Image 1 (tube, rainbow, N blue to C red):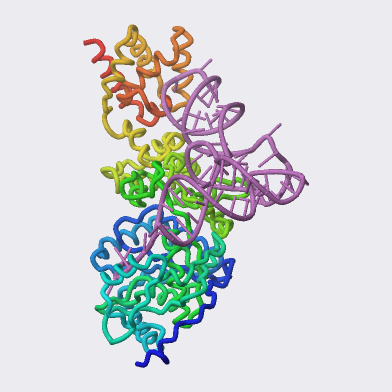
Image 2 (cartoon, rainbow, N blue to C red):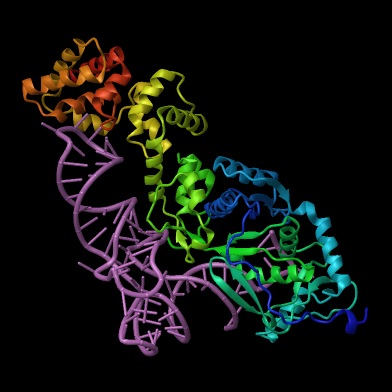
Length: 479
RNA sequence: GCCGCUAUCGUCUAGGGGACUAGGACGCCGGAUUCUCAGUCCGGAAACCGGGGUUCGAAUCCCCGUAGCGGUGCCA
């Protein structure tokens, strides 16, 4: 193949993604590589893609970037799908496997080869590295003869490739600094940056929304698309997420994955709201938003440019707000689902569970906090020794508990409306401080000094068990 | 090294030349809710990375510096 005819370098025209706003009916993709649990950073990318698709009446493609066979185990892929399903982020196409499209990638490589846009370079990667060390500030251009070695795509020697980023504006890269991109390894396997470009083209992707760490890959993908004669999508590169220590979020951080969030008792809707606000804000300072509102208001162009720190404390607060807004029915359902999965299973007593959830709802910030609050209603008190010492081992406790017991015994209608006035009457008559009566009662009933309101606690437990527990505590006090 | 991105309270952010005495939220501190914890309500402290420009005027625009981050693979 004579070099002079087929091997002319592409002209140094400026290449750029054309649009600066999201178009109607966008086609987006979430394209994770299956390295294990879905990271919150990945979850946010998925969410932003999903919001753009749902807002614009578009479609979302789920594509698994599984060309690294070692990491792409079925378990890892299942984890990603599981996480997305839990987050309730649905997709319209896929999951598609990038590895399964290898033939198509090879086909496109052959096209570029025969069109002269690409060539075989027999130079070993070690030699290329050496060359680059000796020639800093220059892009590597391969030998371009023969029919073996890696396949490289010709890059222009001059001009710039500019990425018209939806979030950052135009970002220019000088062509002469880029190496001729390897698009297939010496064994013929296509390389990631090539496969991505082919897939995005074939799948009709109109906006690529992904992490910042891909920004410098983008000019490469743009060159591939240009050589392939395709129209590039628009790009939006999201700033990375950091942990509380300011470092890039990694598996070492607590609650770094969607599965950990789920185990932590967070609601998917709260996670979506929180994640949406990590990197994006509303002009009118609205913080709490339903998913429908998120879909309506989210604009990828309004996403910030700087890295954000994932702060679980704010998520906790937000989750509490979502939890309190649930109907009792939904609250119970969420609690049961959580206990069945993360705890030892939810108690079978449905009616009592409803009553218990009602009193826990105003207190808990996460589903994980519910059970410790309502456990007393289903199991014998779990004694907290320090609570016993602090509350029970004081002067006059036995007397106050005994008189409370007498008052409670006289009550037939075992509900807050009757319990409260009766005990308050006792307090007033004996001039006892509320805490000096209610805390011992609480310890007797629950074993600890922390519980929902004492009248609620008594009511939910029920008359007989409550009286029994107070009697038991009294008996113990008197020995 | 080279290329690129970024920089407002501790954290997430609003702001895009005069409306800034820089707003909101989490967290923190204080108070209230005459039962604990939580929740809720009220109040408070808390920021424009540094230096130069441009301009009558800069948190906002430009340049330089600094710092952080990403990339620089025949990884994805």
